[in-house]
Image (cartoon, rainbow, N blue to C red):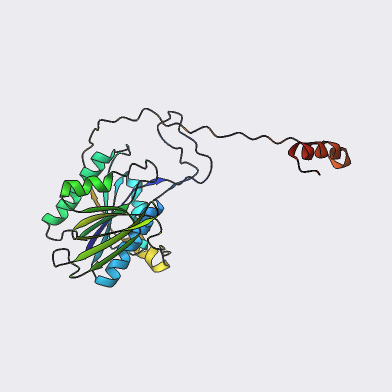
Length: 262
């Protein structure tokens, strides 16, 4: 079973979001980068599948040279091969991103060792466009299922040898189930599994691993980003009623206004 997992380098934002002066990107000097929880689960699912059926997990990202760090994180979790589609750092749209991934899938197939399954996160953690997995499947003519919370593969395990995949998801309070043959594209959601922590031997192996690099040509798309905007948030202000016994009358007045006092 040959599995490709697609991940994206995104800002690690845990507090207040700050934009760069030109309004084009999120300021990351004090935060760093990561991949989304959906994609962490996609890597874990791929590793679990190959542990059961055998095969290799390849992890791919499209981004600047620094995105190799995210690939090494995935290698430390059990992926065996990493592919960096190296760019100059500009943000690629979903159409161009999907085209670059499709080129990698076809390149691998021409080499005689094609992928049986492509896994990706259900949506990007930063843009949330939900498009890349669907566009990849459409270009390849493969089945595609999204928002998946369970995945089981039975049969030959080689995509062309009678393998059957069963995937499930929740939709408006009901359980939906899909059955399809491989190769296919599956977009998974956080919660399909519990990602493991990387081991020390895994980190050391990832640090030494070679990363395969390709440089896809920049592709313009119909949409152009004008600027990012941080949504307005409600501002709250605290009022000091006083200190010690002097604050009691003001406190009683506020409690009375709230209807707390009998």
